Amino acid sequence: MSAAAGHRDGWRIIATDDNTTKLSTIVQTLRDAGHCLFAAYDGRSAFELISLLPDIDLLITNTRLGAVDGLELMRRTRALRPDMPILHVVHSGETPIPVPHDVLTVQEPFTPNQLLLVVGSLLA
Image (tube, helix red, strand yellow):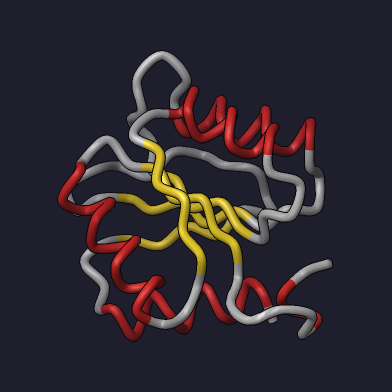
């Protein structure tokens, strides 16, 4: 059951980013807000988590992730879990890539409060 439906405290979120500092910021912000975070440092690891953990509420990814990039991760996630919300983070200076129509893209910089609002809107 989704945490959005009120069946447990906090959401279960997988976050992945090739920039460890930015990933740490996202993870810490959401953990501080009471959510359960799984950090993955590349797309392959993120997809393994999605495959193994049945009750993930949200995937947060960026574009550059190594052998399995963000767009491929989104495609694989959609094939396995078509209804899972996905948040695509575009780092400042990056050009946004075309993503599936149901994927929300946010451009850095953003504040922790802005991140919490976006995540909350995706999972409401």
